[in-house]
Image 1 (cartoon, rainbow over the protein chains, first blue to last red):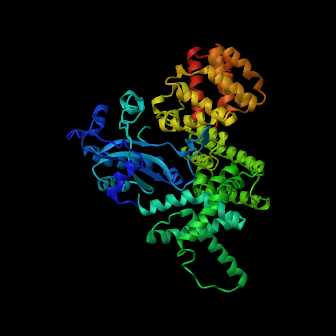
Image 2: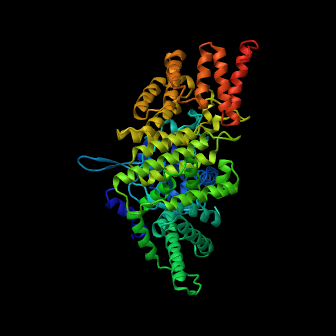
Image 3: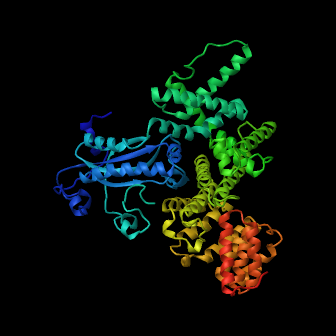
Length: 189
Length: 422
Protein backbone atom coordinates (compact mmCIF):
# COMPACT_ATOMS: atom_id res chain seq x y z
CA UNK A 1 0.00 0.00 0.00
CA UNK A 2 1.43 3.38 -0.94
CA UNK A 3 1.46 6.04 1.69
CA UNK A 4 -1.23 8.63 1.31
CA UNK A 5 1.33 11.32 0.50
CA UNK A 6 2.59 9.29 -2.42
CA UNK A 7 -0.73 9.10 -4.09
CA UNK A 8 -0.39 12.09 -6.37
CA UNK A 9 3.10 11.04 -7.37
CA UNK A 10 1.77 7.58 -8.16
CA UNK A 11 -0.94 9.00 -10.37
CA UNK A 12 1.62 10.99 -12.27
CA UNK A 13 3.80 7.93 -12.66
CA UNK A 14 0.91 6.01 -14.12
CA UNK A 15 0.60 8.57 -16.84
CA UNK A 16 -2.32 10.40 -15.31
CA UNK A 17 -0.90 13.72 -16.37
CA UNK A 18 -4.33 15.26 -16.68
CA UNK A 19 -4.96 15.07 -12.95
CA UNK A 20 -7.66 17.62 -12.48
CA UNK A 21 -6.54 21.08 -11.65
CA UNK A 22 -9.01 23.85 -11.24
CA UNK A 23 -9.19 27.41 -10.05
CA UNK A 24 -10.73 27.59 -6.66
CA UNK A 25 -13.48 30.09 -7.29
CA UNK A 26 -13.88 31.24 -3.75
CA UNK A 27 -17.00 30.01 -2.02
CA UNK A 28 -18.91 29.28 -5.20
CA UNK A 29 -19.72 25.69 -5.95
CA UNK A 30 -17.02 24.21 -8.15
CA UNK A 31 -19.51 22.27 -10.25
CA UNK A 32 -20.72 25.25 -12.24
CA UNK A 33 -17.25 26.45 -13.25
CA UNK A 34 -16.94 26.38 -16.98
CA UNK A 35 -14.43 24.29 -18.80
CA UNK A 36 -11.95 27.09 -19.31
CA UNK A 37 -11.76 27.72 -15.62
CA UNK A 38 -11.33 24.01 -15.03
CA UNK A 39 -8.45 23.80 -17.39
CA UNK A 40 -6.76 26.95 -16.14
CA UNK A 41 -3.79 26.53 -13.91
CA UNK A 42 -4.42 27.16 -10.28
CA UNK A 43 -4.51 25.66 -6.89
CA UNK A 44 -4.71 21.90 -7.21
CA UNK A 45 -7.66 20.18 -5.61
CA UNK A 46 -8.27 16.51 -5.76
CA UNK A 47 -11.47 14.98 -7.04
CA UNK A 48 -12.35 11.65 -5.53
CA UNK A 49 -14.86 9.16 -6.81
CA UNK A 50 -16.78 7.23 -4.21
CA UNK A 51 -17.80 3.94 -5.79
CA UNK A 52 -20.70 2.06 -4.22
CA UNK A 53 -20.38 -1.71 -4.21
CA UNK A 54 -23.14 -3.89 -2.90
CA UNK A 55 -24.49 -7.40 -3.29
CA UNK A 56 -27.20 -7.16 -5.92
CA UNK A 57 -29.16 -10.01 -4.40
CA UNK A 58 -29.40 -8.03 -1.18
CA UNK A 59 -30.19 -4.79 -2.95
CA UNK A 60 -32.91 -6.54 -4.95
CA UNK A 61 -34.35 -7.88 -1.69
CA UNK A 62 -35.17 -4.38 -0.52
CA UNK A 63 -38.77 -3.38 -0.99
CA UNK A 64 -39.55 -0.17 -2.83
CA UNK A 65 -40.57 1.38 0.48
CA UNK A 66 -37.29 0.47 2.15
CA UNK A 67 -35.38 1.68 -0.88
CA UNK A 68 -37.21 5.01 -0.95
CA UNK A 69 -36.55 5.50 2.77
CA UNK A 70 -32.85 4.80 2.27
CA UNK A 71 -32.64 7.15 -0.69
CA UNK A 72 -34.34 9.90 1.31
CA UNK A 73 -31.72 9.58 4.05
CA UNK A 74 -28.88 9.55 1.53
CA UNK A 75 -30.43 12.58 -0.15
CA UNK A 76 -30.13 14.44 3.13
CA UNK A 77 -26.44 13.61 3.37
CA UNK A 78 -26.01 14.76 -0.21
CA UNK A 79 -27.66 18.05 0.66
CA UNK A 80 -25.15 18.54 3.44
CA UNK A 81 -22.21 17.75 1.16
CA UNK A 82 -23.63 19.98 -1.54
CA UNK A 83 -23.97 22.87 0.89
CA UNK A 84 -20.27 22.48 1.66
CA UNK A 85 -19.53 22.68 -2.07
CA UNK A 86 -18.09 19.18 -2.02
CA UNK A 87 -20.57 17.17 -4.00
CA UNK A 88 -20.31 16.77 -7.73
CA UNK A 89 -22.14 14.50 -10.16
CA UNK A 90 -23.48 11.26 -8.84
CA UNK A 91 -25.15 8.31 -10.49
CA UNK A 92 -27.07 5.23 -9.57
CA UNK A 93 -26.56 2.49 -12.11
CA UNK A 94 -29.13 0.03 -13.38
CA UNK A 95 -28.71 -3.60 -12.26
CA UNK A 96 -25.75 -5.46 -13.74
CA UNK A 97 -28.23 -7.61 -15.67
CA UNK A 98 -28.56 -4.63 -18.01
CA UNK A 99 -24.78 -4.44 -18.43
CA UNK A 100 -22.88 -5.21 -21.58
CA UNK A 101 -19.13 -5.37 -21.70
CA UNK A 102 -16.72 -5.04 -24.55
CA UNK A 103 -13.46 -6.93 -24.34
CA UNK A 104 -10.55 -5.02 -25.78
CA UNK A 105 -8.56 -6.43 -28.65
CA UNK A 106 -8.17 -6.19 -32.41
CA UNK A 107 -11.66 -7.62 -32.78
CA UNK A 108 -13.46 -6.46 -29.67
CA UNK A 109 -15.92 -8.99 -28.30
CA UNK A 110 -19.25 -7.90 -26.84
CA UNK A 111 -20.31 -9.90 -23.81
CA UNK A 112 -23.45 -9.69 -21.69
CA UNK A 113 -23.55 -9.26 -17.99
CA UNK A 114 -21.29 -7.71 -15.39
CA UNK A 115 -17.54 -7.66 -15.72
CA UNK A 116 -16.94 -10.54 -13.36
CA UNK A 117 -18.86 -12.84 -11.10
CA UNK A 118 -18.15 -11.13 -7.86
CA UNK A 119 -20.10 -11.01 -4.65
CA UNK A 120 -20.52 -7.26 -4.80
CA UNK A 121 -21.16 -5.18 -7.88
CA UNK A 122 -20.67 -1.53 -8.71
CA UNK A 123 -24.14 -0.03 -8.32
CA UNK A 124 -23.40 3.69 -8.43
CA UNK A 125 -20.91 6.44 -7.73
CA UNK A 126 -20.39 9.97 -6.47
CA UNK A 127 -17.74 12.53 -7.32
CA UNK A 128 -16.60 14.67 -4.41
CA UNK A 129 -14.19 17.55 -4.31
CA UNK A 130 -12.02 17.30 -1.24
CA UNK A 131 -8.71 18.80 -0.22
CA UNK A 132 -7.45 15.57 1.28
CA UNK A 133 -8.18 11.87 1.30
CA UNK A 134 -9.18 12.34 4.93
CA UNK A 135 -12.00 14.66 3.81
CA UNK A 136 -13.12 12.21 1.15
CA UNK A 137 -13.19 9.42 3.73
CA UNK A 138 -15.33 11.62 5.96
CA UNK A 139 -17.77 12.21 3.11
CA UNK A 140 -17.88 8.49 2.36
CA UNK A 141 -18.50 7.71 6.01
CA UNK A 142 -21.53 9.99 6.03
CA UNK A 143 -22.93 8.14 3.03
CA UNK A 144 -21.99 4.73 4.39
CA UNK A 145 -23.86 5.38 7.62
CA UNK A 146 -27.12 5.52 5.65
CA UNK A 147 -26.53 2.34 3.66
CA UNK A 148 -27.40 -1.01 5.21
CA UNK A 149 -24.61 -3.01 3.58
CA UNK A 150 -21.99 -2.94 0.89
CA UNK A 151 -18.68 -1.15 0.55
CA UNK A 152 -17.67 2.28 -0.65
CA UNK A 153 -14.41 2.46 -2.54
CA UNK A 154 -12.69 5.83 -2.70
CA UNK A 155 -10.67 6.32 -5.84
CA UNK A 156 -8.98 9.57 -6.88
CA UNK A 157 -10.15 10.87 -10.24
CA UNK A 158 -7.51 11.28 -12.94
CA UNK A 159 -9.50 12.90 -15.73
CA UNK A 160 -12.81 14.64 -15.26
CA UNK A 161 -15.03 16.20 -17.89
CA UNK A 162 -18.10 17.58 -16.17
CA UNK A 163 -19.67 19.28 -19.18
CA UNK A 164 -19.66 16.41 -21.63
CA UNK A 165 -23.32 15.63 -21.15
CA UNK A 166 -24.65 18.88 -19.76
CA UNK A 167 -27.29 19.10 -22.49
CA UNK A 168 -28.66 15.67 -21.79
CA UNK A 169 -32.29 15.85 -20.68
CA UNK A 170 -31.54 13.57 -17.74
CA UNK A 171 -29.50 16.41 -16.28
CA UNK A 172 -32.35 18.89 -16.25
CA UNK A 173 -35.28 17.51 -14.34
CA UNK A 174 -37.36 20.58 -15.21
CA UNK A 175 -37.57 19.45 -18.85
CA UNK A 176 -38.74 16.02 -17.82
CA UNK A 177 -41.94 16.17 -15.83
CA UNK A 178 -41.67 12.48 -15.04
CA UNK A 179 -38.34 12.78 -13.36
CA UNK A 180 -38.25 13.31 -9.66
CA UNK A 181 -37.58 16.85 -8.54
CA UNK A 182 -34.13 16.13 -7.22
CA UNK A 183 -31.52 14.88 -9.58
CA UNK A 184 -30.03 12.35 -7.21
CA UNK A 185 -28.85 8.87 -8.07
CA UNK A 186 -31.87 6.68 -8.28
CA UNK A 187 -34.09 9.68 -7.90
CA UNK A 188 -35.44 9.26 -11.39
CA UNK A 189 -38.64 7.38 -10.88
CA UNK B 1 -31.65 -0.30 8.70
CA UNK B 2 -31.50 -2.08 12.03
CA UNK B 3 -29.47 -5.21 12.62
CA UNK B 4 -32.54 -7.40 12.60
CA UNK B 5 -33.87 -5.86 9.39
CA UNK B 6 -30.48 -6.42 7.78
CA UNK B 7 -30.39 -10.05 8.89
CA UNK B 8 -33.91 -10.55 7.62
CA UNK B 9 -32.95 -9.12 4.23
CA UNK B 10 -29.78 -11.22 4.10
CA UNK B 11 -31.69 -14.42 4.93
CA UNK B 12 -34.31 -13.69 2.26
CA UNK B 13 -31.66 -12.94 -0.33
CA UNK B 14 -29.64 -16.07 0.48
CA UNK B 15 -32.64 -18.39 0.63
CA UNK B 16 -32.71 -19.76 -2.95
CA UNK B 17 -28.99 -20.45 -3.01
CA UNK B 18 -28.88 -22.03 0.44
CA UNK B 19 -31.99 -24.15 -0.03
CA UNK B 20 -30.77 -25.18 -3.48
CA UNK B 21 -27.43 -26.37 -2.09
CA UNK B 22 -29.07 -28.17 0.84
CA UNK B 23 -31.49 -29.88 -1.54
CA UNK B 24 -28.50 -31.19 -3.47
CA UNK B 25 -26.98 -32.58 -0.27
CA UNK B 26 -30.11 -34.07 1.26
CA UNK B 27 -32.24 -34.83 -1.79
CA UNK B 28 -35.60 -34.07 -0.19
CA UNK B 29 -37.31 -30.75 0.21
CA UNK B 30 -38.30 -31.47 3.80
CA UNK B 31 -34.76 -32.26 4.92
CA UNK B 32 -33.42 -29.21 3.08
CA UNK B 33 -36.06 -26.97 4.64
CA UNK B 34 -35.36 -28.32 8.14
CA UNK B 35 -31.64 -27.70 7.75
CA UNK B 36 -32.31 -24.22 6.39
CA UNK B 37 -34.61 -23.40 9.30
CA UNK B 38 -32.00 -24.51 11.80
CA UNK B 39 -29.29 -22.49 10.06
CA UNK B 40 -31.51 -19.41 10.13
CA UNK B 41 -32.21 -19.85 13.84
CA UNK B 42 -28.49 -20.01 14.51
CA UNK B 43 -27.90 -16.97 12.33
CA UNK B 44 -30.46 -15.01 14.32
CA UNK B 45 -28.70 -15.99 17.51
CA UNK B 46 -25.17 -15.62 16.22
CA UNK B 47 -25.01 -12.71 13.79
CA UNK B 48 -26.19 -9.95 16.12
CA UNK B 49 -23.42 -10.92 18.55
CA UNK B 50 -20.54 -11.73 16.22
CA UNK B 51 -21.52 -9.52 13.32
CA UNK B 52 -22.76 -10.69 9.95
CA UNK B 53 -20.48 -13.08 8.07
CA UNK B 54 -18.85 -11.93 4.88
CA UNK B 55 -20.80 -14.44 2.85
CA UNK B 56 -24.17 -15.12 4.48
CA UNK B 57 -25.14 -17.83 1.97
CA UNK B 58 -21.94 -19.82 2.50
CA UNK B 59 -22.34 -19.54 6.28
CA UNK B 60 -25.92 -20.80 6.16
CA UNK B 61 -25.07 -23.72 3.84
CA UNK B 62 -22.17 -24.72 6.06
CA UNK B 63 -24.16 -24.55 9.29
CA UNK B 64 -27.27 -26.13 7.76
CA UNK B 65 -25.31 -29.02 6.34
CA UNK B 66 -23.45 -29.66 9.57
CA UNK B 67 -26.68 -29.64 11.52
CA UNK B 68 -28.33 -32.16 9.24
CA UNK B 69 -25.30 -34.44 9.09
CA UNK B 70 -25.22 -34.35 12.84
CA UNK B 71 -28.87 -35.36 12.97
CA UNK B 72 -28.19 -38.32 10.71
CA UNK B 73 -25.21 -39.37 12.81
CA UNK B 74 -27.22 -39.01 15.98
CA UNK B 75 -30.01 -41.19 14.67
CA UNK B 76 -27.74 -43.88 13.23
CA UNK B 77 -25.76 -44.31 16.41
CA UNK B 78 -28.82 -44.30 18.65
CA UNK B 79 -26.81 -42.35 21.13
CA UNK B 80 -27.15 -38.80 22.21
CA UNK B 81 -24.30 -36.61 21.15
CA UNK B 82 -23.49 -33.71 23.39
CA UNK B 83 -25.36 -30.55 22.51
CA UNK B 84 -22.89 -28.51 20.56
CA UNK B 85 -23.90 -24.91 20.18
CA UNK B 86 -20.74 -24.07 18.32
CA UNK B 87 -21.22 -26.34 15.32
CA UNK B 88 -20.04 -24.56 12.25
CA UNK B 89 -19.99 -21.25 13.99
CA UNK B 90 -16.38 -20.86 14.92
CA UNK B 91 -15.20 -22.26 11.63
CA UNK B 92 -12.11 -20.65 10.22
CA UNK B 93 -12.77 -18.01 7.62
CA UNK B 94 -10.97 -19.93 4.90
CA UNK B 95 -13.28 -22.93 5.20
CA UNK B 96 -16.20 -20.64 4.55
CA UNK B 97 -14.30 -19.04 1.74
CA UNK B 98 -13.43 -22.34 0.09
CA UNK B 99 -16.99 -23.54 0.26
CA UNK B 100 -18.27 -20.34 -1.28
CA UNK B 101 -15.71 -20.56 -4.08
CA UNK B 102 -16.68 -24.11 -4.87
CA UNK B 103 -20.36 -23.23 -4.86
CA UNK B 104 -19.92 -20.25 -7.12
CA UNK B 105 -17.68 -22.06 -9.53
CA UNK B 106 -19.78 -25.09 -10.21
CA UNK B 107 -23.07 -25.75 -8.48
CA UNK B 108 -24.57 -22.47 -7.44
CA UNK B 109 -26.36 -21.80 -10.70
CA UNK B 110 -27.69 -25.30 -11.16
CA UNK B 111 -28.73 -25.53 -7.51
CA UNK B 112 -31.08 -22.59 -7.82
CA UNK B 113 -32.34 -23.69 -11.19
CA UNK B 114 -33.05 -27.18 -9.79
CA UNK B 115 -34.88 -25.72 -6.81
CA UNK B 116 -37.06 -23.66 -9.13
CA UNK B 117 -37.50 -26.57 -11.50
CA UNK B 118 -38.60 -28.93 -8.74
CA UNK B 119 -41.49 -26.55 -8.09
CA UNK B 120 -42.70 -26.64 -11.67
CA UNK B 121 -42.85 -30.39 -12.02
CA UNK B 122 -45.08 -31.23 -15.00
CA UNK B 123 -47.34 -33.41 -12.83
CA UNK B 124 -48.31 -30.41 -10.73
CA UNK B 125 -51.17 -28.18 -11.88
CA UNK B 126 -50.17 -24.56 -12.45
CA UNK B 127 -51.77 -23.29 -9.24
CA UNK B 128 -49.78 -25.81 -7.18
CA UNK B 129 -46.55 -24.93 -8.99
CA UNK B 130 -47.00 -21.28 -8.14
CA UNK B 131 -47.94 -21.98 -4.53
CA UNK B 132 -44.94 -24.23 -4.09
CA UNK B 133 -42.51 -21.77 -5.66
CA UNK B 134 -43.77 -18.95 -3.48
CA UNK B 135 -43.49 -21.09 -0.38
CA UNK B 136 -40.18 -22.83 -1.11
CA UNK B 137 -38.15 -20.42 -3.22
CA UNK B 138 -39.50 -17.04 -2.17
CA UNK B 139 -40.01 -18.14 1.41
CA UNK B 140 -43.48 -16.65 1.84
CA UNK B 141 -45.32 -18.10 4.82
CA UNK B 142 -48.22 -20.46 4.16
CA UNK B 143 -50.47 -17.69 5.43
CA UNK B 144 -49.09 -15.23 2.90
CA UNK B 145 -49.45 -17.71 0.04
CA UNK B 146 -52.99 -18.52 1.19
CA UNK B 147 -53.84 -14.83 1.19
CA UNK B 148 -52.46 -14.46 -2.33
CA UNK B 149 -54.75 -17.25 -3.51
CA UNK B 150 -57.69 -16.20 -1.35
CA UNK B 151 -58.02 -19.60 0.29
CA UNK B 152 -57.83 -20.55 3.94
CA UNK B 153 -54.50 -21.23 5.54
CA UNK B 154 -55.32 -24.88 6.20
CA UNK B 155 -56.43 -25.41 2.60
CA UNK B 156 -53.14 -23.95 1.38
CA UNK B 157 -51.17 -26.02 3.89
CA UNK B 158 -52.83 -29.13 2.44
CA UNK B 159 -52.22 -28.03 -1.12
CA UNK B 160 -48.53 -27.50 -0.47
CA UNK B 161 -48.16 -30.77 1.42
CA UNK B 162 -49.81 -32.64 -1.43
CA UNK B 163 -47.59 -30.94 -3.99
CA UNK B 164 -44.49 -31.86 -1.99
CA UNK B 165 -45.60 -35.47 -1.71
CA UNK B 166 -46.08 -35.68 -5.46
CA UNK B 167 -42.62 -34.29 -6.03
CA UNK B 168 -40.88 -36.62 -3.62
CA UNK B 169 -42.54 -39.56 -5.36
CA UNK B 170 -41.21 -38.33 -8.69
CA UNK B 171 -37.61 -38.57 -9.77
CA UNK B 172 -35.53 -35.45 -9.59
CA UNK B 173 -32.22 -35.48 -11.40
CA UNK B 174 -29.43 -34.37 -9.12
CA UNK B 175 -26.58 -34.71 -11.57
CA UNK B 176 -25.28 -31.58 -13.15
CA UNK B 177 -27.64 -31.07 -16.09
CA UNK B 178 -26.39 -31.12 -19.65
CA UNK B 179 -27.06 -28.23 -22.00
CA UNK B 180 -30.37 -29.52 -23.47
CA UNK B 181 -31.68 -30.44 -20.03
CA UNK B 182 -30.67 -27.07 -18.64
CA UNK B 183 -32.48 -25.34 -21.50
CA UNK B 184 -35.62 -27.39 -20.84
CA UNK B 185 -35.51 -26.51 -17.15
CA UNK B 186 -35.03 -22.87 -17.98
CA UNK B 187 -38.13 -22.89 -20.19
CA UNK B 188 -40.27 -24.55 -17.53
CA UNK B 189 -39.06 -22.17 -14.84
CA UNK B 190 -39.65 -19.13 -17.07
CA UNK B 191 -43.22 -20.23 -17.66
CA UNK B 192 -43.77 -20.65 -13.93
CA UNK B 193 -42.45 -17.14 -13.22
CA UNK B 194 -44.66 -15.78 -16.00
CA UNK B 195 -47.66 -17.51 -14.38
CA UNK B 196 -46.88 -15.99 -10.99
CA UNK B 197 -46.79 -12.57 -12.59
CA UNK B 198 -50.02 -13.14 -14.49
CA UNK B 199 -51.75 -14.25 -11.32
CA UNK B 200 -50.77 -10.92 -9.80
CA UNK B 201 -51.31 -8.81 -12.91
CA UNK B 202 -54.93 -9.78 -13.37
CA UNK B 203 -56.08 -11.85 -10.47
CA UNK B 204 -58.18 -14.89 -11.21
CA UNK B 205 -60.66 -14.13 -8.49
CA UNK B 206 -61.68 -11.90 -5.67
CA UNK B 207 -61.98 -8.19 -5.17
CA UNK B 208 -58.40 -7.15 -5.72
CA UNK B 209 -57.83 -6.83 -9.45
CA UNK B 210 -54.07 -6.48 -9.11
CA UNK B 211 -51.97 -8.27 -6.51
CA UNK B 212 -48.80 -6.28 -6.40
CA UNK B 213 -46.81 -8.61 -4.10
CA UNK B 214 -47.21 -11.47 -6.57
CA UNK B 215 -45.98 -9.25 -9.40
CA UNK B 216 -43.02 -8.09 -7.34
CA UNK B 217 -42.14 -11.64 -6.37
CA UNK B 218 -42.23 -12.71 -10.02
CA UNK B 219 -39.92 -9.85 -10.94
CA UNK B 220 -37.56 -10.80 -8.14
CA UNK B 221 -37.41 -14.41 -9.35
CA UNK B 222 -36.97 -13.31 -12.93
CA UNK B 223 -34.08 -11.04 -12.01
CA UNK B 224 -32.55 -13.89 -10.03
CA UNK B 225 -32.80 -16.16 -13.07
CA UNK B 226 -31.25 -13.47 -15.27
CA UNK B 227 -28.33 -13.04 -12.87
CA UNK B 228 -27.71 -16.78 -13.21
CA UNK B 229 -28.07 -16.75 -17.00
CA UNK B 230 -26.99 -13.26 -18.01
CA UNK B 231 -26.65 -14.10 -21.71
CA UNK B 232 -30.05 -15.68 -22.34
CA UNK B 233 -32.06 -13.30 -24.50
CA UNK B 234 -35.37 -14.93 -23.57
CA UNK B 235 -34.72 -14.41 -19.85
CA UNK B 236 -33.84 -10.79 -20.63
CA UNK B 237 -37.12 -10.63 -22.54
CA UNK B 238 -39.09 -12.17 -19.68
CA UNK B 239 -37.60 -9.80 -17.12
CA UNK B 240 -38.15 -6.82 -19.40
CA UNK B 241 -41.73 -7.86 -20.06
CA UNK B 242 -42.56 -8.10 -16.35
CA UNK B 243 -40.85 -4.77 -15.58
CA UNK B 244 -42.62 -2.94 -18.41
CA UNK B 245 -46.03 -4.33 -17.49
CA UNK B 246 -45.56 -3.73 -13.80
CA UNK B 247 -44.46 -0.13 -14.45
CA UNK B 248 -48.06 0.69 -15.34
CA UNK B 249 -49.55 -0.61 -12.10
CA UNK B 250 -50.09 2.81 -10.44
CA UNK B 251 -52.16 3.90 -13.45
CA UNK B 252 -54.22 0.76 -14.05
CA UNK B 253 -56.87 1.39 -11.39
CA UNK B 254 -58.42 4.68 -10.39
CA UNK B 255 -59.13 5.87 -6.84
CA UNK B 256 -62.36 3.83 -6.76
CA UNK B 257 -60.53 0.72 -7.98
CA UNK B 258 -62.09 0.94 -11.43
CA UNK B 259 -60.08 -0.39 -14.34
CA UNK B 260 -58.45 2.33 -16.42
CA UNK B 261 -57.71 1.14 -19.95
CA UNK B 262 -54.26 1.59 -21.44
CA UNK B 263 -55.39 4.44 -23.70
CA UNK B 264 -56.98 6.35 -20.80
CA UNK B 265 -54.16 5.91 -18.29
CA UNK B 266 -52.35 8.85 -16.76
CA UNK B 267 -48.94 8.06 -18.19
CA UNK B 268 -47.14 10.32 -15.74
CA UNK B 269 -47.96 7.66 -13.12
CA UNK B 270 -46.01 4.98 -14.97
CA UNK B 271 -42.87 4.03 -13.09
CA UNK B 272 -40.02 5.44 -15.16
CA UNK B 273 -37.23 3.52 -13.44
CA UNK B 274 -38.84 0.17 -14.25
CA UNK B 275 -39.48 1.26 -17.83
CA UNK B 276 -35.86 2.35 -18.19
CA UNK B 277 -34.57 -1.01 -16.99
CA UNK B 278 -37.08 -2.86 -19.18
CA UNK B 279 -36.13 -0.92 -22.30
CA UNK B 280 -32.42 -1.50 -21.65
CA UNK B 281 -33.03 -5.24 -21.39
CA UNK B 282 -35.17 -5.41 -24.54
CA UNK B 283 -32.53 -3.56 -26.50
CA UNK B 284 -29.82 -5.86 -25.19
CA UNK B 285 -31.87 -8.98 -25.92
CA UNK B 286 -32.66 -8.00 -29.50
CA UNK B 287 -28.94 -7.62 -30.26
CA UNK B 288 -28.68 -11.40 -29.97
CA UNK B 289 -30.94 -11.85 -33.01
CA UNK B 290 -32.56 -14.90 -31.46
CA UNK B 291 -36.14 -13.69 -31.10
CA UNK B 292 -38.52 -15.56 -28.81
CA UNK B 293 -42.01 -15.11 -27.42
CA UNK B 294 -40.94 -13.21 -24.29
CA UNK B 295 -38.70 -10.86 -26.24
CA UNK B 296 -41.51 -10.10 -28.66
CA UNK B 297 -44.04 -9.50 -25.91
CA UNK B 298 -41.51 -7.27 -24.19
CA UNK B 299 -40.88 -5.39 -27.43
CA UNK B 300 -44.63 -4.78 -27.76
CA UNK B 301 -44.81 -3.54 -24.18
CA UNK B 302 -41.77 -1.36 -24.92
CA UNK B 303 -43.56 0.32 -27.84
CA UNK B 304 -46.47 1.20 -25.53
CA UNK B 305 -44.16 2.46 -22.81
CA UNK B 306 -42.42 4.81 -25.24
CA UNK B 307 -45.59 6.58 -26.36
CA UNK B 308 -45.97 9.79 -24.38
CA UNK B 309 -49.69 9.86 -25.23
CA UNK B 310 -51.96 7.00 -26.31
CA UNK B 311 -52.38 8.75 -29.69
CA UNK B 312 -48.61 8.54 -30.24
CA UNK B 313 -48.58 4.73 -30.10
CA UNK B 314 -46.76 3.16 -33.02
CA UNK B 315 -49.45 0.63 -33.96
CA UNK B 316 -47.66 -0.32 -37.19
CA UNK B 317 -44.70 -1.54 -35.16
CA UNK B 318 -47.00 -3.39 -32.76
CA UNK B 319 -48.87 -4.98 -35.68
CA UNK B 320 -45.58 -6.26 -37.11
CA UNK B 321 -44.40 -7.60 -33.77
CA UNK B 322 -47.66 -9.50 -33.28
CA UNK B 323 -47.34 -10.97 -36.76
CA UNK B 324 -43.96 -12.43 -35.81
CA UNK B 325 -45.26 -13.54 -32.40
CA UNK B 326 -48.16 -15.38 -34.10
CA UNK B 327 -45.75 -17.40 -36.21
CA UNK B 328 -43.45 -18.17 -33.26
CA UNK B 329 -46.18 -18.94 -30.77
CA UNK B 330 -49.54 -19.41 -32.50
CA UNK B 331 -52.32 -18.98 -29.96
CA UNK B 332 -55.86 -17.59 -30.07
CA UNK B 333 -55.00 -15.17 -27.26
CA UNK B 334 -52.10 -13.73 -29.28
CA UNK B 335 -54.41 -13.33 -32.29
CA UNK B 336 -56.99 -11.63 -30.06
CA UNK B 337 -54.41 -9.09 -28.93
CA UNK B 338 -53.16 -8.68 -32.49
CA UNK B 339 -56.73 -7.76 -33.47
CA UNK B 340 -56.56 -4.71 -31.19
CA UNK B 341 -53.61 -3.38 -33.19
CA UNK B 342 -55.39 -4.21 -36.44
CA UNK B 343 -58.51 -2.31 -35.31
CA UNK B 344 -56.37 0.76 -34.63
CA UNK B 345 -54.67 0.55 -38.02
CA UNK B 346 -57.31 -0.80 -40.37
CA UNK B 347 -60.58 -0.41 -38.53
CA UNK B 348 -62.96 -2.52 -36.42
CA UNK B 349 -64.45 -4.53 -39.31
CA UNK B 350 -61.16 -6.19 -40.17
CA UNK B 351 -60.41 -6.80 -36.50
CA UNK B 352 -63.81 -8.40 -35.94
CA UNK B 353 -63.31 -10.67 -38.94
CA UNK B 354 -60.01 -11.69 -37.40
CA UNK B 355 -61.42 -12.70 -34.04
CA UNK B 356 -64.68 -14.32 -35.13
CA UNK B 357 -62.99 -17.65 -36.01
CA UNK B 358 -61.66 -17.74 -32.42
CA UNK B 359 -65.16 -17.92 -30.90
CA UNK B 360 -64.97 -21.67 -30.36
CA UNK B 361 -61.58 -21.70 -28.65
CA UNK B 362 -62.21 -18.59 -26.56
CA UNK B 363 -65.82 -19.27 -25.60
CA UNK B 364 -64.88 -19.02 -21.93
CA UNK B 365 -62.50 -16.09 -22.18
CA UNK B 366 -63.54 -12.78 -20.64
CA UNK B 367 -61.35 -10.63 -22.86
CA UNK B 368 -62.68 -12.18 -26.07
CA UNK B 369 -66.20 -10.93 -25.34
CA UNK B 370 -64.90 -7.63 -23.99
CA UNK B 371 -63.07 -6.89 -27.24
CA UNK B 372 -65.89 -8.26 -29.40
CA UNK B 373 -68.36 -5.94 -27.65
CA UNK B 374 -66.07 -2.94 -28.05
CA UNK B 375 -65.57 -3.62 -31.78
CA UNK B 376 -69.31 -4.09 -32.30
CA UNK B 377 -70.00 -0.73 -30.64
CA UNK B 378 -67.54 0.92 -33.02
CA UNK B 379 -69.39 -0.77 -35.90
CA UNK B 380 -72.66 0.59 -34.53
CA UNK B 381 -74.18 -2.81 -33.82
CA UNK B 382 -75.48 -2.20 -30.26
CA UNK B 383 -77.65 -5.32 -29.94
CA UNK B 384 -74.82 -7.71 -30.67
CA UNK B 385 -72.50 -5.62 -28.51
CA UNK B 386 -74.88 -5.98 -25.58
CA UNK B 387 -74.97 -9.75 -26.02
CA UNK B 388 -71.16 -9.88 -26.05
CA UNK B 389 -70.87 -7.68 -22.94
CA UNK B 390 -73.44 -9.75 -21.05
CA UNK B 391 -71.39 -12.83 -21.81
CA UNK B 392 -68.24 -11.00 -20.66
CA UNK B 393 -69.81 -10.07 -17.30
CA UNK B 394 -70.70 -13.68 -16.74
CA UNK B 395 -67.05 -14.61 -17.32
CA UNK B 396 -65.46 -11.74 -15.34
CA UNK B 397 -62.81 -12.92 -12.92
CA UNK B 398 -62.82 -9.95 -10.58
CA UNK B 399 -65.29 -7.34 -9.41
CA UNK B 400 -63.31 -4.67 -11.27
CA UNK B 401 -63.64 -6.54 -14.56
CA UNK B 402 -67.38 -6.90 -14.13
CA UNK B 403 -67.75 -3.23 -13.18
CA UNK B 404 -65.81 -2.16 -16.23
CA UNK B 405 -68.09 -4.08 -18.59
CA UNK B 406 -71.16 -2.81 -16.76
CA UNK B 407 -69.94 0.69 -17.58
CA UNK B 408 -70.04 -0.18 -21.29
CA UNK B 409 -73.51 -1.65 -20.92
CA UNK B 410 -74.76 1.45 -19.10
CA UNK B 411 -73.37 3.64 -21.85
CA UNK B 412 -75.07 1.46 -24.47
CA UNK B 413 -78.33 1.72 -22.57
CA UNK B 414 -77.94 5.47 -22.46
CA UNK B 415 -76.99 5.87 -26.14
CA UNK B 416 -79.88 3.78 -27.44
CA UNK B 417 -82.37 5.58 -25.24
CA UNK B 418 -83.31 2.74 -22.96
CA UNK B 419 -82.77 0.09 -25.57
CA UNK B 420 -84.58 -3.17 -25.88
CA UNK B 421 -84.06 -6.03 -23.51
CA UNK B 422 -82.04 -8.83 -24.98
